[in-house]
Length: 389
Image (cartoon, rainbow, N blue to C red):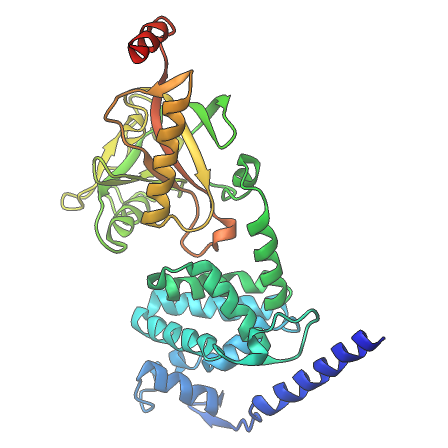
């Protein structure tokens, strides 16, 4: 009973703290241009977007997003309905498309709000029971943000956006943190990876030939890709997305597929083409003259030397450091394997990413893959004798 009483006492103190820390609404509704607006939320939105209040059309656009604190209070709460959360997130997504600079500035404000609790004793505690405290909720969000970044500060705003995208389907930010911890502890098996693969998107067909624990050997069927040169930032991705979504000479829109393939040897990023263009003789839409998009068979070179491919998988973000570590591990596994070897001695693994940029690390499927062949059994004794000599 003493322990329970202590917890209840702490909960009461936290509730009192939250009440003191949360500003009184003081909201004033006024009529402007024939519509009712929340002047406090609109003022903050206008300040963040640097919009002239006299420009009524821009005011209408800016006022759709509430103040950053109000936004976070709603999307983190277990009491806000999933419908209302989805509406808020959709407004943010629309802002990203319609006004990218305003979106980036709003994300900066959301990030600053989340980080404002760093060093706060209430926020740093992972409470055993839900507490009605905005700062405690921000603490949960900030811990997840740190887990997502894992030392990669350059992804901070993208990580904030990824977490926000997950909140509508969660029963509050505390429940999302618990899910993140649970799924991060789960063994990263291929079964788990398949569950993380986006539904409804075509992906190349393959058959598993050998299972090796942390890696496997697959036999891929023929598939084609559209490719462009990799570059800093999202330029290559946007170029390929433009081609897929109708930026071609026939203005033909195609379905999105997965995975996105990055080949460091050729410096090309590739999207898998829809299966209608995998067969010989099929005619894909023609890239625009200056689009720098090319159509390739054999999976963009992945299965050019051999349709058999060694693959290992991992969750999280496919940072350069993590990807290089996984590539090195796969090559070491192949060196030690008695059945399979690189199809070409100079072969370099490629990166396959299956999820959109807004998926959090505990829901992501990444792979590194390299073409392989079966070892010549007659060559093994000779090699062993040579090594012994």
